[in-house]
Length: 113
Length: 113
Image 1: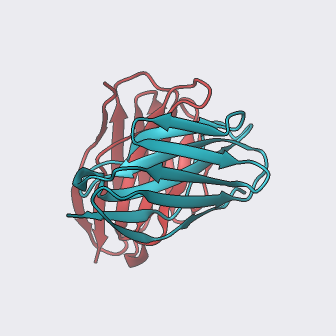
Image 2: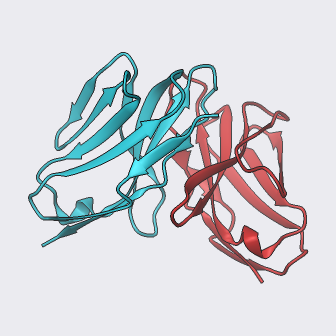
């Protein structure tokens, strides 16, 4: 089955700096890569996603890039703010695998004042 | 807005008990999922269902079963609870559309003593 690795497990940045979280996947048939944000005590929520026919997608301060050849994708957050502090999960979905998502192990992002 | 409701926020059970975790969604979604969340391990898929009375094993189905008698309700069953099943359990649903996002419930924190 699909395997998704995520790094780093923890990330601390100063407010206003950029943060980058990286994920790799194993199954070349994966075609959909969402990112979820989970604030403390709350449910995971989708923040951005990318499909395999696109190399980059941006939504205000967040962007995701995808390198299909290398089988890795990354989340970029610019101008970080304290409210960006949360756990971020990457995920991958295999073509033909229905809507089943395989998640990475998560990154605890802390934005310090 | 999609609402996924898990019946209990916190649950404490004894080893060997049969445990039922209930999940209800109000958006007529075809797909429903049970994930388990543990620190450092991310979100791991236990079981999922594409339709009423249909179920498929995820990555860690051992010790669990599920039931989907109605489209809006998906139950996770621990036949004989063990201490290693102490965890946060998250239910999620999605529509049948291509690459539709997962909508999560608030989770049930289960402690088995």
